[in-house]
Image 1: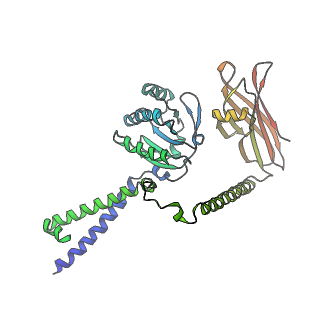
Image 2: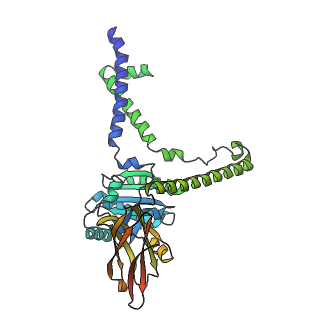
Image 3: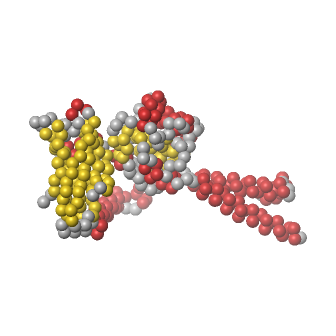
Length: 176
Length: 208
């Protein structure tokens, strides 16, 4: 009899524990960069590897995808190659791509950009100020910004399979 | 439903299965919540309500649009007043110092950045984009620094970097020692062309 009464109680306890675990696990996996979603993208100006100064706010009115990367990261290079394929297709539709390299040496960044044949602007955040402003902890991190300058999505890490999900979100924004 | 569940599993197995199912449900719910934008996309395939059903048809919409435009205008005016009020509070006239950059012609100098030092303290380091340089050449004036200084003598150093004649890297400094009185102080950094020497010229001057 006691055993029968204790069974629903155990079940309820298990439910509460599971719900709590799921919430806690979800909170821990969210990084600081994802906290920017829904907020205005912090403005910055950086020098590109071509010597041109680029200011994020000047892209207002277009969809902007900012990719934070470093030259020694294989996933970063894979993401940049994927983005390079999108550049030709979606530039006319209003997609602007901006790569922000966090390496110490500009020459490394320039060499890698040349090696990958990147056709979109590659900038160098030598002082890591932009990285701090966007609280980037993972490589690569891509920040998707809408036409009003609001951060709509933050993609952390990259695998080939993630490319399609990213592209779907970009297409959604281009349709808005 | 639970009876079927009890038939299939028993004892320890059932408890493990219950926890697994709950975890899957919780994670699925979370994954769905992470894609709000996809859910917010309006459905244009025929499920949308007719426009007229929302109230008053085209006339109603025109009136609503006018109201929205009025509110937008009021909001812009309020924002402007707040900005002026904030500036007056943060930078009162008796301590206010503002530094502006302007450009005249600019054939001999392609501006890249301007660094301002006030009394040996870096107060501004501004990188100019091509569009900003174009705006300066068209007659625009850029407020590069706005701050507070106590009354007395102060020294301003401005360092200009960019490309000079023949695309050469160019870095030039200009200084000004000025007396800050009780009124606001406005300083202009002028970049102009010296035609005779075919060189750029950097002038620092106070606005009267």
